[in-house]
Length: 226
Image 1 (cartoon, rainbow, N blue to C red):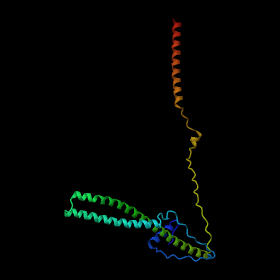
Image 2 (image 1 turned 90 degrees about the horizontal axis):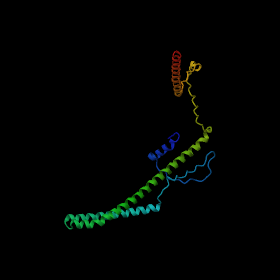
Image 3 (image 1 turned 120 degrees about the vertical axis):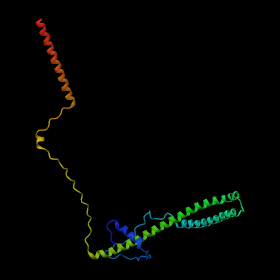
Image 4 (image 1 turned 45 degrees about the vertical axis):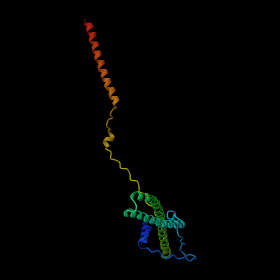
C-alpha cells in the first residue's frame, strides 16, 4: 500500500485492523547497522495508549465479579422459591413481602458491584487491545522503514529538498477611470445648511431695511409737502 502525505499511517493502520495478523515477536540480534543505514529504534508509547489499570487490579476485579455473579444467582434462587411458596399457598402475601425485602436490598447492592467490576474489566480489555494494535502498527512501520533504508542507497537518489509554498502575490487594487472633464471643472461645492440659512436671513433683513428706508422717504416727502 502506498499513501500520500499524512494519510499513509492511517491507511496502514486500517489495513492492519482488517487483514493484519500478529507476528511472533523476534528478539533483535545486536550488531552494527550496515553502511548507509540508520539504526531504527521503536518510538515511545504515547500516554494516551498506556493502561490505567494494573495487572493486580484487574485480577482482583475479575475475582470480585465472579463472586458477585454467584451471589446474584443465589439471591435469584431464593426469591424464586419465595414466590413459588406464595403460589402454592404455603405463605400469604404479607409474609412474602416481609421475606423478599432483605433479598431486594442485597440484589441492588450486588447489581451495583457487578456493574463496577464489569466496567473495570471492559476498560482493561479495551486498553489492552489498543496497546496491542499500536505495537503491531509499530512493528510494521519499522519493518517498512528498514526496507526503505536498505533500498534507497542503491538507487543513488538526489537528496530531497524542502520546497516552500509560494506565497501569493497581492493583487493590485483596481482604480476606477476618472473622467478628465470632472478633473478640470470640478462641480461646485454645495454650501453647508448653516450658510444657506444665514444668506436667507440676510436677504430678509435687507428686504426689511429697504422697506423701512422707503417708508422714511415717504414720510419726509409728506412733511415737505405739508
